[in-house]
Length: 459
Image 1: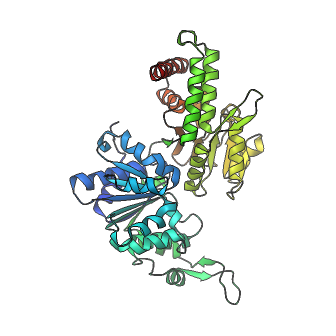
Image 2: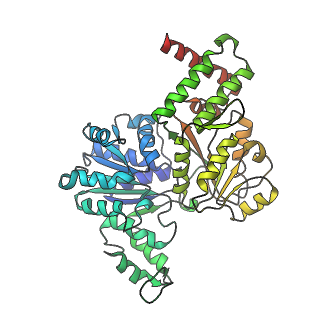
Protein backbone atom coordinates (compact mmCIF):
# COMPACT_ATOMS: atom_id res chain seq x y z
CA UNK A 1 0.00 0.00 0.00
CA UNK A 2 1.05 3.58 -0.64
CA UNK A 3 1.18 5.71 2.51
CA UNK A 4 -0.41 9.14 2.12
CA UNK A 5 -0.15 10.68 5.58
CA UNK A 6 -2.80 12.96 6.99
CA UNK A 7 -1.51 16.43 7.85
CA UNK A 8 -1.17 15.57 11.55
CA UNK A 9 0.77 12.41 10.66
CA UNK A 10 3.16 14.35 8.41
CA UNK A 11 3.69 16.86 11.23
CA UNK A 12 4.48 14.10 13.72
CA UNK A 13 6.90 12.38 11.33
CA UNK A 14 8.85 15.58 10.80
CA UNK A 15 8.87 16.26 14.54
CA UNK A 16 10.31 12.80 15.28
CA UNK A 17 13.01 13.32 12.67
CA UNK A 18 13.96 16.77 13.98
CA UNK A 19 14.00 15.99 17.72
CA UNK A 20 16.00 13.45 19.71
CA UNK A 21 13.47 13.04 22.55
CA UNK A 22 9.76 13.02 21.80
CA UNK A 23 6.59 12.05 23.64
CA UNK A 24 4.00 11.25 20.97
CA UNK A 25 0.70 11.18 22.82
CA UNK A 26 -1.87 10.04 20.24
CA UNK A 27 -5.01 8.02 20.83
CA UNK A 28 -4.99 4.36 19.71
CA UNK A 29 -5.88 4.16 16.04
CA UNK A 30 -4.32 7.42 14.91
CA UNK A 31 -1.31 5.71 13.36
CA UNK A 32 1.46 5.95 15.96
CA UNK A 33 3.15 2.83 14.55
CA UNK A 34 3.33 3.91 10.90
CA UNK A 35 4.32 7.44 11.95
CA UNK A 36 7.20 6.12 14.04
CA UNK A 37 8.38 3.57 11.46
CA UNK A 38 8.31 6.20 8.70
CA UNK A 39 10.50 8.53 10.74
CA UNK A 40 12.77 5.65 11.76
CA UNK A 41 13.16 4.52 8.14
CA UNK A 42 14.12 8.05 7.07
CA UNK A 43 16.63 8.41 9.91
CA UNK A 44 18.09 4.99 9.20
CA UNK A 45 18.38 4.99 5.42
CA UNK A 46 18.35 8.64 4.32
CA UNK A 47 20.10 10.46 7.15
CA UNK A 48 22.20 7.69 8.73
CA UNK A 49 21.31 8.96 12.20
CA UNK A 50 20.03 5.64 13.56
CA UNK A 51 22.11 2.48 13.59
CA UNK A 52 20.12 0.11 15.79
CA UNK A 53 16.67 0.67 17.26
CA UNK A 54 14.83 -1.06 20.10
CA UNK A 55 11.05 -1.08 20.42
CA UNK A 56 9.58 -2.05 23.80
CA UNK A 57 5.89 -2.93 23.54
CA UNK A 58 3.04 -4.89 25.14
CA UNK A 59 3.41 -8.61 24.42
CA UNK A 60 0.72 -9.04 21.74
CA UNK A 61 1.81 -5.82 20.04
CA UNK A 62 5.42 -6.98 20.07
CA UNK A 63 4.45 -10.29 18.49
CA UNK A 64 2.97 -8.95 15.29
CA UNK A 65 1.92 -5.29 15.09
CA UNK A 66 5.28 -3.72 14.27
CA UNK A 67 6.34 -6.39 11.76
CA UNK A 68 2.91 -6.38 10.10
CA UNK A 69 2.93 -2.58 9.80
CA UNK A 70 6.35 -2.61 8.13
CA UNK A 71 5.14 -5.19 5.59
CA UNK A 72 1.91 -3.31 4.94
CA UNK A 73 3.37 -0.09 3.49
CA UNK A 74 5.41 0.15 0.32
CA UNK A 75 7.84 2.73 1.69
CA UNK A 76 8.66 0.52 4.70
CA UNK A 77 9.39 -2.72 2.82
CA UNK A 78 13.14 -2.24 3.31
CA UNK A 79 12.77 -2.11 7.11
CA UNK A 80 13.88 -5.30 8.87
CA UNK A 81 11.90 -5.73 12.10
CA UNK A 82 12.99 -8.55 14.40
CA UNK A 83 10.75 -9.72 17.30
CA UNK A 84 12.77 -10.70 20.38
CA UNK A 85 10.35 -13.11 22.03
CA UNK A 86 10.01 -16.62 23.39
CA UNK A 87 12.58 -18.56 25.38
CA UNK A 88 15.96 -17.10 26.29
CA UNK A 89 17.61 -19.05 23.48
CA UNK A 90 15.07 -17.73 20.97
CA UNK A 91 15.61 -14.17 22.20
CA UNK A 92 19.38 -14.46 21.98
CA UNK A 93 19.09 -15.87 18.47
CA UNK A 94 16.85 -12.96 17.44
CA UNK A 95 19.27 -10.40 18.90
CA UNK A 96 22.09 -11.98 16.88
CA UNK A 97 20.11 -11.63 13.64
CA UNK A 98 20.83 -8.44 11.61
CA UNK A 99 17.88 -6.04 11.64
CA UNK A 100 17.00 -2.36 11.70
CA UNK A 101 14.78 -2.57 14.76
CA UNK A 102 14.26 -5.18 17.46
CA UNK A 103 10.90 -5.54 19.23
CA UNK A 104 10.74 -6.93 22.76
CA UNK A 105 7.88 -7.21 25.23
CA UNK A 106 8.05 -4.84 28.20
CA UNK A 107 8.29 -7.69 30.72
CA UNK A 108 11.76 -8.52 29.38
CA UNK A 109 13.18 -5.00 29.70
CA UNK A 110 15.17 -5.87 32.81
CA UNK A 111 16.50 -9.06 31.23
CA UNK A 112 17.67 -7.14 28.15
CA UNK A 113 19.51 -4.50 30.17
CA UNK A 114 21.17 -7.13 32.35
CA UNK A 115 22.13 -9.15 29.28
CA UNK A 116 24.00 -6.31 27.54
CA UNK A 117 25.18 -4.44 30.66
CA UNK A 118 27.92 -2.01 29.55
CA UNK A 119 27.65 -3.11 25.92
CA UNK A 120 24.21 -1.59 25.35
CA UNK A 121 23.89 -1.55 21.52
CA UNK A 122 20.69 0.44 20.86
CA UNK A 123 21.11 4.11 20.01
CA UNK A 124 17.34 4.56 19.64
CA UNK A 125 14.62 3.31 22.00
CA UNK A 126 10.88 3.49 21.36
CA UNK A 127 8.45 2.83 24.21
CA UNK A 128 5.15 1.68 22.77
CA UNK A 129 2.60 2.44 25.49
CA UNK A 130 4.97 4.41 27.69
CA UNK A 131 2.39 4.67 30.48
CA UNK A 132 3.48 1.15 31.48
CA UNK A 133 6.73 2.83 32.65
CA UNK A 134 4.96 5.42 34.81
CA UNK A 135 5.97 3.80 38.12
CA UNK A 136 9.46 5.05 39.13
CA UNK A 137 9.76 2.11 41.55
CA UNK A 138 9.23 -0.54 38.88
CA UNK A 139 12.12 -2.74 37.71
CA UNK A 140 11.48 -1.90 34.07
CA UNK A 141 11.81 1.86 34.74
CA UNK A 142 14.94 1.43 36.85
CA UNK A 143 16.51 -0.80 34.20
CA UNK A 144 15.97 1.73 31.41
CA UNK A 145 17.22 4.51 33.66
CA UNK A 146 20.55 2.67 33.98
CA UNK A 147 21.18 2.76 30.22
CA UNK A 148 19.45 6.03 29.38
CA UNK A 149 22.75 7.91 28.96
CA UNK A 150 23.74 5.45 26.21
CA UNK A 151 20.56 6.13 24.20
CA UNK A 152 20.76 8.94 21.63
CA UNK A 153 17.10 9.02 20.54
CA UNK A 154 14.16 8.24 22.79
CA UNK A 155 10.50 8.12 21.70
CA UNK A 156 7.43 7.46 23.86
CA UNK A 157 4.08 6.47 22.41
CA UNK A 158 0.84 6.47 24.35
CA UNK A 159 -2.71 7.76 24.19
CA UNK A 160 -3.07 8.90 27.79
CA UNK A 161 0.23 9.45 29.61
CA UNK A 162 -1.52 10.59 32.79
CA UNK A 163 -4.52 8.30 32.92
CA UNK A 164 -4.79 8.21 36.73
CA UNK A 165 -3.15 11.48 37.80
CA UNK A 166 -0.48 13.99 36.87
CA UNK A 167 1.94 12.00 39.05
CA UNK A 168 2.09 9.42 36.25
CA UNK A 169 3.96 11.89 34.06
CA UNK A 170 7.17 12.20 36.04
CA UNK A 171 8.78 8.83 35.25
CA UNK A 172 7.86 9.03 31.56
CA UNK A 173 9.22 12.56 31.12
CA UNK A 174 12.34 11.66 33.13
CA UNK A 175 13.16 8.96 30.59
CA UNK A 176 12.87 11.60 27.87
CA UNK A 177 14.96 14.37 29.40
CA UNK A 178 16.74 13.02 32.49
CA UNK A 179 14.73 15.24 34.85
CA UNK A 180 15.42 18.60 33.18
CA UNK A 181 11.77 19.66 32.94
CA UNK A 182 9.90 18.08 35.84
CA UNK A 183 12.71 17.56 38.35
CA UNK A 184 15.43 15.00 38.90
CA UNK A 185 13.39 13.04 41.48
CA UNK A 186 9.73 12.21 42.02
CA UNK A 187 9.96 13.97 45.40
CA UNK A 188 11.10 17.22 43.79
CA UNK A 189 8.27 16.93 41.27
CA UNK A 190 5.69 16.43 44.02
CA UNK A 191 7.06 19.30 46.11
CA UNK A 192 6.80 21.70 43.19
CA UNK A 193 3.41 20.78 41.73
CA UNK A 194 1.42 18.98 44.45
CA UNK A 195 0.25 19.23 48.04
CA UNK A 196 -0.09 16.19 50.33
CA UNK A 197 -3.55 14.64 50.44
CA UNK A 198 -4.45 11.70 52.66
CA UNK A 199 -1.76 10.97 55.23
CA UNK A 200 -0.94 9.81 58.72
CA UNK A 201 1.94 10.93 60.92
CA UNK A 202 4.65 9.29 58.81
CA UNK A 203 3.13 8.38 55.45
CA UNK A 204 1.53 10.40 52.65
CA UNK A 205 -0.97 8.24 50.76
CA UNK A 206 -1.92 10.65 47.98
CA UNK A 207 -1.11 14.03 46.44
CA UNK A 208 -3.38 16.74 45.08
CA UNK A 209 -2.23 19.06 42.26
CA UNK A 210 -1.74 22.68 43.25
CA UNK A 211 -3.82 25.31 41.50
CA UNK A 212 -2.42 25.90 38.04
CA UNK A 213 -0.21 22.79 38.11
CA UNK A 214 -1.72 21.28 34.99
CA UNK A 215 -0.95 24.34 32.88
CA UNK A 216 2.56 24.70 34.33
CA UNK A 217 3.35 21.05 33.63
CA UNK A 218 1.90 21.28 30.15
CA UNK A 219 4.06 24.26 29.33
CA UNK A 220 7.15 22.64 30.83
CA UNK A 221 6.92 19.60 28.54
CA UNK A 222 5.32 21.19 25.47
CA UNK A 223 8.59 21.38 23.54
CA UNK A 224 9.17 17.61 23.61
CA UNK A 225 5.60 16.23 23.72
CA UNK A 226 2.91 16.21 21.04
CA UNK A 227 -0.62 15.67 22.32
CA UNK A 228 -3.22 15.05 19.66
CA UNK A 229 -6.24 13.84 21.49
CA UNK A 230 -8.26 17.01 20.95
CA UNK A 231 -9.61 17.02 17.41
CA UNK A 232 -9.75 20.85 17.52
CA UNK A 233 -6.02 21.00 16.90
CA UNK A 234 -5.65 18.52 14.07
CA UNK A 235 -7.34 17.56 10.84
CA UNK A 236 -8.86 14.11 11.18
CA UNK A 237 -11.29 12.03 9.14
CA UNK A 238 -14.70 11.31 10.63
CA UNK A 239 -13.97 7.59 10.93
CA UNK A 240 -10.58 5.94 11.43
CA UNK A 241 -10.20 2.20 10.78
CA UNK A 242 -7.63 0.47 12.97
CA UNK A 243 -6.92 -3.15 12.02
CA UNK A 244 -5.01 -4.78 14.88
CA UNK A 245 -3.17 -7.95 13.84
CA UNK A 246 -3.29 -10.94 16.18
CA UNK A 247 -0.96 -13.90 15.83
CA UNK A 248 -1.91 -17.36 17.05
CA UNK A 249 0.51 -19.32 19.20
CA UNK A 250 1.79 -22.63 17.82
CA UNK A 251 -0.88 -24.78 19.52
CA UNK A 252 -3.72 -22.52 18.40
CA UNK A 253 -2.34 -22.35 14.84
CA UNK A 254 -2.19 -26.15 14.70
CA UNK A 255 -5.80 -26.37 15.92
CA UNK A 256 -6.94 -23.78 13.36
CA UNK A 257 -5.24 -25.54 10.44
CA UNK A 258 -6.64 -28.90 11.50
CA UNK A 259 -10.18 -27.52 11.78
CA UNK A 260 -9.84 -25.67 8.48
CA UNK A 261 -8.60 -28.73 6.63
CA UNK A 262 -11.25 -31.07 8.05
CA UNK A 263 -14.14 -28.71 7.43
CA UNK A 264 -13.12 -27.53 3.98
CA UNK A 265 -12.25 -30.92 2.58
CA UNK A 266 -15.55 -32.37 3.77
CA UNK A 267 -17.26 -30.18 1.18
CA UNK A 268 -16.51 -30.59 -2.50
CA UNK A 269 -15.51 -27.29 -4.04
CA UNK A 270 -18.30 -27.52 -6.62
CA UNK A 271 -21.04 -28.24 -4.08
CA UNK A 272 -20.58 -25.48 -1.53
CA UNK A 273 -23.94 -24.02 -0.58
CA UNK A 274 -24.81 -20.95 1.42
CA UNK A 275 -25.76 -23.14 4.36
CA UNK A 276 -22.61 -25.19 4.41
CA UNK A 277 -20.48 -22.10 3.75
CA UNK A 278 -21.98 -20.46 6.82
CA UNK A 279 -21.19 -23.49 8.96
CA UNK A 280 -17.63 -23.65 7.67
CA UNK A 281 -16.81 -20.01 8.24
CA UNK A 282 -18.70 -19.87 11.53
CA UNK A 283 -16.51 -22.57 13.05
CA UNK A 284 -13.32 -20.93 11.79
CA UNK A 285 -14.36 -17.50 13.05
CA UNK A 286 -15.16 -19.01 16.44
CA UNK A 287 -11.71 -20.55 16.64
CA UNK A 288 -10.13 -17.22 15.67
CA UNK A 289 -11.83 -15.71 18.70
CA UNK A 290 -10.60 -18.44 21.03
CA UNK A 291 -13.35 -21.03 21.55
CA UNK A 292 -15.58 -23.34 19.50
CA UNK A 293 -19.02 -24.78 20.24
CA UNK A 294 -19.12 -28.58 20.29
CA UNK A 295 -22.07 -30.70 19.10
CA UNK A 296 -23.89 -30.09 22.37
CA UNK A 297 -23.37 -26.33 22.08
CA UNK A 298 -20.81 -26.22 24.85
CA UNK A 299 -17.95 -23.76 24.39
CA UNK A 300 -14.57 -25.47 24.21
CA UNK A 301 -11.73 -23.03 24.88
CA UNK A 302 -8.84 -23.29 22.41
CA UNK A 303 -6.62 -20.24 23.08
CA UNK A 304 -6.46 -16.75 24.61
CA UNK A 305 -4.48 -15.01 21.86
CA UNK A 306 -7.22 -12.62 20.74
CA UNK A 307 -8.42 -12.15 24.32
CA UNK A 308 -4.92 -11.04 25.35
CA UNK A 309 -4.81 -8.56 22.45
CA UNK A 310 -8.22 -7.26 23.53
CA UNK A 311 -7.00 -6.69 27.10
CA UNK A 312 -3.94 -4.83 25.84
CA UNK A 313 -6.15 -2.58 23.69
CA UNK A 314 -8.43 -1.80 26.65
CA UNK A 315 -5.35 -0.95 28.72
CA UNK A 316 -4.09 1.36 25.97
CA UNK A 317 -7.40 3.25 26.01
CA UNK A 318 -6.63 4.08 29.65
CA UNK A 319 -10.17 4.71 30.77
CA UNK A 320 -11.64 5.93 27.48
CA UNK A 321 -14.98 4.24 26.97
CA UNK A 322 -15.35 1.46 24.40
CA UNK A 323 -18.33 -0.10 22.65
CA UNK A 324 -17.35 -3.73 22.02
CA UNK A 325 -19.14 -5.96 19.51
CA UNK A 326 -19.02 -9.74 19.80
CA UNK A 327 -20.31 -12.42 17.45
CA UNK A 328 -20.67 -15.47 19.71
CA UNK A 329 -21.96 -15.82 23.26
CA UNK A 330 -18.78 -17.53 24.42
CA UNK A 331 -16.87 -14.42 23.30
CA UNK A 332 -19.06 -12.32 25.58
CA UNK A 333 -18.60 -14.68 28.52
CA UNK A 334 -14.82 -14.84 28.20
CA UNK A 335 -14.54 -11.04 27.86
CA UNK A 336 -16.71 -10.53 30.93
CA UNK A 337 -14.50 -12.91 32.86
CA UNK A 338 -11.25 -11.14 32.00
CA UNK A 339 -12.69 -7.63 32.40
CA UNK A 340 -13.92 -8.47 35.90
CA UNK A 341 -10.40 -8.04 37.28
CA UNK A 342 -9.66 -4.71 35.57
CA UNK A 343 -11.55 -2.32 37.85
CA UNK A 344 -13.83 -1.14 35.04
CA UNK A 345 -17.54 -0.54 34.85
CA UNK A 346 -18.62 -3.24 32.39
CA UNK A 347 -22.08 -4.04 31.13
CA UNK A 348 -23.76 -6.10 28.41
CA UNK A 349 -26.37 -4.14 26.48
CA UNK A 350 -29.84 -5.52 27.17
CA UNK A 351 -32.25 -2.65 27.79
CA UNK A 352 -32.89 1.08 27.36
CA UNK A 353 -31.31 1.93 30.71
CA UNK A 354 -27.97 0.68 29.38
CA UNK A 355 -28.20 3.23 26.57
CA UNK A 356 -28.89 6.05 29.03
CA UNK A 357 -26.12 4.99 31.44
CA UNK A 358 -23.61 4.72 28.60
CA UNK A 359 -24.42 8.20 27.32
CA UNK A 360 -24.15 9.56 30.87
CA UNK A 361 -20.61 8.21 31.21
CA UNK A 362 -21.50 5.53 33.74
CA UNK A 363 -20.18 2.59 31.67
CA UNK A 364 -16.53 2.09 30.68
CA UNK A 365 -16.98 -0.96 28.46
CA UNK A 366 -20.32 -1.80 26.85
CA UNK A 367 -20.52 -5.26 25.26
CA UNK A 368 -23.12 -5.73 22.57
CA UNK A 369 -24.13 -8.08 19.79
CA UNK A 370 -24.52 -6.17 16.50
CA UNK A 371 -27.91 -7.76 15.88
CA UNK A 372 -29.32 -6.39 19.15
CA UNK A 373 -27.53 -3.07 19.21
CA UNK A 374 -27.14 -2.19 15.55
CA UNK A 375 -30.29 -0.20 14.86
CA UNK A 376 -31.92 2.88 16.30
CA UNK A 377 -29.71 3.38 19.35
CA UNK A 378 -28.01 6.72 19.96
CA UNK A 379 -24.75 5.97 21.77
CA UNK A 380 -22.64 8.82 20.41
CA UNK A 381 -22.45 10.69 23.73
CA UNK A 382 -20.77 7.87 25.66
CA UNK A 383 -17.53 7.42 23.72
CA UNK A 384 -15.85 7.28 20.33
CA UNK A 385 -14.05 3.91 20.32
CA UNK A 386 -15.61 0.82 18.72
CA UNK A 387 -13.92 -2.57 19.13
CA UNK A 388 -14.86 -5.56 16.99
CA UNK A 389 -13.75 -8.62 18.96
CA UNK A 390 -15.54 -10.99 16.60
CA UNK A 391 -16.47 -10.09 13.03
CA UNK A 392 -19.75 -10.55 11.17
CA UNK A 393 -20.35 -11.35 7.49
CA UNK A 394 -23.35 -9.03 7.49
CA UNK A 395 -22.31 -5.72 5.92
CA UNK A 396 -25.61 -4.17 7.01
CA UNK A 397 -25.10 -5.21 10.65
CA UNK A 398 -21.50 -4.03 10.55
CA UNK A 399 -22.27 -0.57 9.16
CA UNK A 400 -25.34 -0.06 11.34
CA UNK A 401 -23.42 -1.06 14.47
CA UNK A 402 -20.65 1.43 13.72
CA UNK A 403 -23.27 4.14 13.22
CA UNK A 404 -24.24 3.86 16.90
CA UNK A 405 -21.25 6.13 17.65
CA UNK A 406 -20.65 7.76 14.26
CA UNK A 407 -23.75 9.95 14.10
CA UNK A 408 -24.89 13.50 14.67
CA UNK A 409 -23.87 14.74 18.10
CA UNK A 410 -20.52 12.91 18.16
CA UNK A 411 -17.78 15.41 18.97
CA UNK A 412 -14.75 13.19 18.34
CA UNK A 413 -13.50 11.20 15.36
CA UNK A 414 -14.81 7.65 15.73
CA UNK A 415 -12.05 5.04 15.85
CA UNK A 416 -13.09 1.52 14.87
CA UNK A 417 -10.66 -1.19 16.03
CA UNK A 418 -10.75 -4.67 14.46
CA UNK A 419 -8.90 -7.57 16.11
CA UNK A 420 -7.74 -9.64 13.12
CA UNK A 421 -6.11 -13.06 13.41
CA UNK A 422 -3.42 -13.29 10.73
CA UNK A 423 -3.74 -15.83 7.89
CA UNK A 424 -7.26 -16.77 8.89
CA UNK A 425 -10.91 -16.31 8.04
CA UNK A 426 -10.78 -13.01 9.95
CA UNK A 427 -8.71 -11.51 7.12
CA UNK A 428 -11.21 -12.68 4.52
CA UNK A 429 -14.14 -11.15 6.38
CA UNK A 430 -12.49 -7.79 7.08
CA UNK A 431 -11.39 -7.47 3.45
CA UNK A 432 -14.94 -8.08 2.27
CA UNK A 433 -16.30 -5.55 4.80
CA UNK A 434 -13.75 -2.91 3.75
CA UNK A 435 -14.41 -3.54 0.06
CA UNK A 436 -18.20 -3.40 0.63
CA UNK A 437 -18.66 -5.93 -2.14
CA UNK A 438 -20.97 -8.90 -2.57
CA UNK A 439 -20.49 -10.67 0.75
CA UNK A 440 -21.88 -14.02 -0.37
CA UNK A 441 -19.65 -14.05 -3.46
CA UNK A 442 -16.64 -13.05 -1.38
CA UNK A 443 -17.38 -15.90 1.01
CA UNK A 444 -17.65 -18.49 -1.76
CA UNK A 445 -14.51 -17.32 -3.51
CA UNK A 446 -12.57 -17.32 -0.26
CA UNK A 447 -13.62 -20.87 0.56
CA UNK A 448 -12.74 -22.13 -2.91
CA UNK A 449 -9.34 -20.46 -2.74
CA UNK A 450 -8.63 -22.05 0.66
CA UNK A 451 -9.70 -25.48 -0.62
CA UNK A 452 -7.32 -25.19 -3.56
CA UNK A 453 -4.49 -24.09 -1.24
CA UNK A 454 -5.06 -26.97 1.18
CA UNK A 455 -5.36 -29.53 -1.61
CA UNK A 456 -2.04 -28.40 -3.08
CA UNK A 457 -0.43 -28.54 0.37
CA UNK A 458 -1.44 -32.13 1.10
CA UNK A 459 -1.30 -33.64 -2.38
